Length: 377
Image (cartoon, rainbow, N blue to C red; front, side):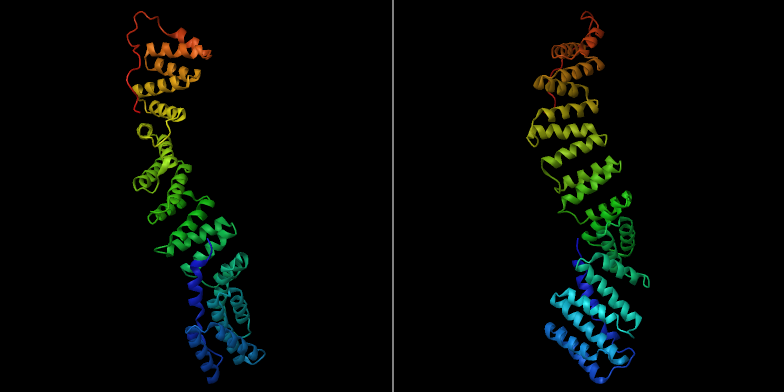
């Protein structure tokens, strides 16, 4: 995230001399007319010619009296304006730095140029120098929202996350409609600074304009989950899924896992069952095992036993037969338990023998019906 959003601000702010050039010391009528003429030519697009003439005049006035020095500073500002419009930001920075350093320039005007120089240096990627200059300026000014955002950006680029978070919150307080980029900056700074609740609030605010940005929704849900709020995470994910912002097998699987984490395993099982039936997810042993685990967590006894039976039959792993047998014992399905535990013992699960030994004899069993029917999908 670079500083392009600030470019128009810097350029517009550079044209300040029309309202301040006539402050003390007094300028001659000839200088005033020349400055006005150059400004008009600048507005008409004669950028290269204005830069050349303004630079020539500034050089001519070097070493003069107070009036000459003031005129020189204004010519340098004009040259800087022209260079910005030509895309020569480095040259513009040099002109502004020279102008604000001229002896006799009013402090208020020097500060305006200081702020503009800080913004231009930010555009050049001179982060540390830009932050130093802007910090100097903030020492004498409260600043506005644009300046607050710029300082937040500069602090973030230096990985000074606490300061970036502070400036972001200051900027947010004064910005009624921050851009998606600025909300993203604030969320990152707040998250890196450990202010997770504030970061999530900003991310949720960002989502209002993120209908075409699935990553923003994933990020918000992920942060909610890391904060220990899986219910909030799954609510965000479901909203994005219903709107079609999230889609595909990976997002579908994460939707299922979020429901499991949020304590809604029956919903997870229903979604997974439908996905397997429709072919939205691979009908793999791994996914079948996840379905069985979901129904088990939901205490859907019949569906869980059917699902585990399918897993055990497909994989024929001793640990799956053992798990099925243990569940069947717990849920008083003794005939199924005996079958599953015998298969587990045959597969090498040594503890299956102890489970089998704990079962009552066949005679008198009344609750040992076999699993019948099909699990959902």
